[in-house]
Length: 386
Image 1 (cartoon, rainbow, N blue to C red):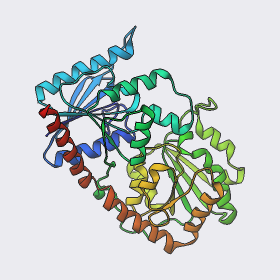
Image 2 (image 1 turned 90 degrees about the vertical axis):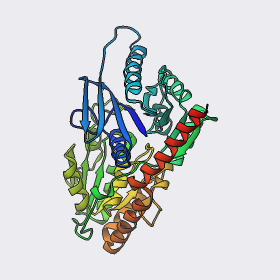
Image 3 (image 1 turned 90 degrees about the horizontal axis):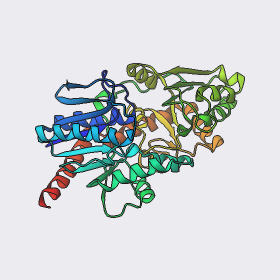
Image 4 (image 1 turned 180 degrees about the vertical axis):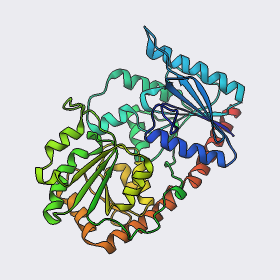
């Protein structure tokens, strides 16, 4: 098949931005190409106009244009025109786009459009219990109405999104995001720095990081030499208006606890992997995700994890088997699970081993690619019959 992705981000040095969406799309694009498919990636909102051959995957950087009036509409029509010209020329058969901001609203394509629920603004506003701009909801709803099908990374994300937008007639297929297991190995899981707790992700309220000061305080009451390492970019806080969530966190830690906290900011991913290997326990106390890629990556590296227990996380981890699930606001229980793993090496290693097996079974990108191919084929064939 000839498959294309439309995305605001992608993991490549020449692309302006890449986070969870960009990483998951690249993982899938590479896996699909290895299965013999032609892959094109349209990345909009870029500073330059360029076509890149990334080991066989064609990346089209679509330069951002500024408009004095109706920018939200003209921006979309510009992307639509560019994509359709390439779709016709390259004979692309199916296009996938994310739900975030409803980028495909007002766009018309000559091929089936599949929208993957990476997480819409509507979805995250609901989980975070914050008010949403009506315009954002409108764009996202319009975009979904023009799709032939949806793909959701978890059943939780699929059902909640369809409930919020009152989607009833469009088919939704649950296919999780996957990782290349060869890139996430830990040959010596028994070798780690004892009593080291690791968080990886943006420092932002929805990730549950503001719960960590209280949780860490409880941990240190039992294990005074426990260390907490934070990795990820800082972000503004929408609730307080602060330009830095890290500043809020610093003020929330007890002074003696803060001495045992290290914030490393954004670092190269090879360094991140090394920190995962060195960690005793990884924590992800998030309030809002559709899946949680970094959780899967840490599981693949045989790490004992204490995760949130909200919806999507229950589809990643079997509680008390391949990790622990605790609500982020339940500070005492969350801390007790961390303490249990820090004090019991045998348990931590056993949990980590089962976490790896869980990822091999559910999140291997080779298996995930085949599921996507079958679903794409179904949509293409049903469209041609019509």
